[in-house]
Length: 199
Image (cartoon, rainbow, N blue to C red; front, side, top):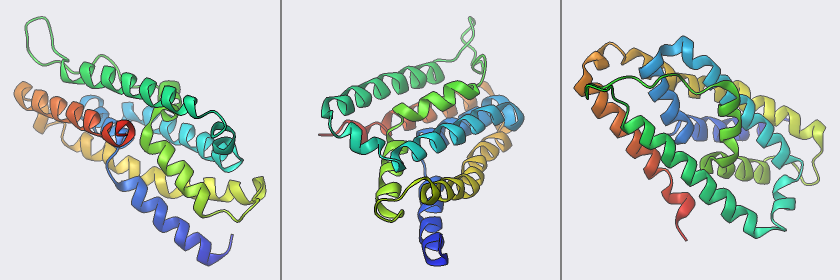
């Protein structure tokens, strides 16, 4: 990978990885509700799952999937349904007494890996990146360094969201503040569905 390509790809990675989206929203919520240490498995799953997706797309998965346009619709609506379930659980987390209670456990490693395949922003990022930066007819030798670059630059960007959430934990010990935060994050997840579901 030459320096010019690395700089251009790196700029795309930083811009797309630091901006809000389902992964970063969920990582920040996890940081608030569980702290940074317990969120690390979620973070690792995001990076592993997206890395696998990026590699698959770079090696031609999107071209294969384009032969079955109905599959994209199934993926869009399955992803939307799953994200609505997550948003509902986050927004309604409360104890029997009605006091706000943190969700029972953070998203695990494998759940975060699997989530990438129904995450609309992940698909847009993967297809856009692999359609723009590898040379035509690129093989594994050209794709793998780009996937590695995404991991090296993208992981700290996502970790910042989890860390920011973790720093808010003490402020959000108050049940009312935590409820407002959880509902806000749930609404952000729902809002992130718009680009995926619009005609």
